[in-house]
Amino acid sequence: MTLPTNDGLDAIMADPAGAVIGLDFDGTLSPIVADPAQAYVHPEAPAVLAELAGHVRAVVIVTGRPPATALALGAAPAGPSLEDVPGLVILGHYGLERWEGGRITAPPPPAGLDLVRARLPELVRGMDGVVIEDKERAVAVHTRRSPDPAAALDALREPVARLAADAGLAVEPGRMVLELRPPGMDKGRALTAFLTERGARSVMFVGDDLGDLAAFDAVDAAGLPGVRVCSGSAEVTALAERADVVVDGPAGVVALLGDLCEAIGKRSARGAS
Ligand SMILES: O=P(O)(O)OC[C@H]1O[C@H](O[C@H]2O[C@H](CO)[C@@H](O)[C@H](O)[C@H]2O)[C@H](O)[C@@H](O)[C@@H]1O
Image (cartoon, rainbow, N blue to C red):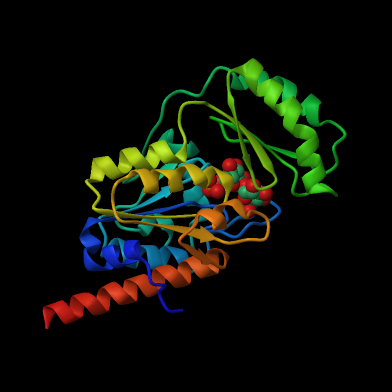
């Protein structure tokens, strides 16, 4: 793969020590699969992130998953795991829960989740293949394994929105999923705060789903050289329409990051000689 021509990428390569690289997890670092518990990270992702982390200011994963789940799915039987990526930060639950250096910080779970846990099973009763994922600080309802996933998702939109309103929660729509989660935080706010915290001089964000649009907005609003990368799929087109670079799923993301590492390495070797 040859790196595309892009001002944001050029800025990252010219000054990697000032760059923050943000990445989504599902659909970006791990492939979309039927069972969320089996969405293991692309086997080459931890190694390429570890190499990248040696060049840039920070690597941060911004995800709807709890950080502990991303770490569990990022464990490799051989080679490095996500946990081995130097200085990695994981902003889970759309930025509410932070993992760094083995420590997790988070606010208490929202009270409204009890209502969701009480009512959601009744709401999906009889819907073949519809599955509830309880993430402790949020609850997601998945339709990917139903006979008609898109129709099941559409049928659930209104009742889930009503339940979220009753529970004081927000609805986060995604790839064959509706998530009921605490309001007031999103990937854009999380990324913006992180860029400020780290004094970023450039930024890349890589995502695949609707929840990543807020992070694209944050790249635009940062006032820094930036690059928005879409991990492309036939399922979601909204991100590709906003992206500077579109790659083919997690394998394409890994290839792009590998090429970025190589280009940074070559530049720094030229600078040293
Ligand atoms: O912010 P992300 O890291 O992209 O997390 C968003 C949701 O991802 C997961 O669901 C998605 O991936 C599953 C595994 O491939 C797939 O089965 C499902 O259809 C997708 O929507 C996760 O299970 C959710 O909790 C996350 O909110």
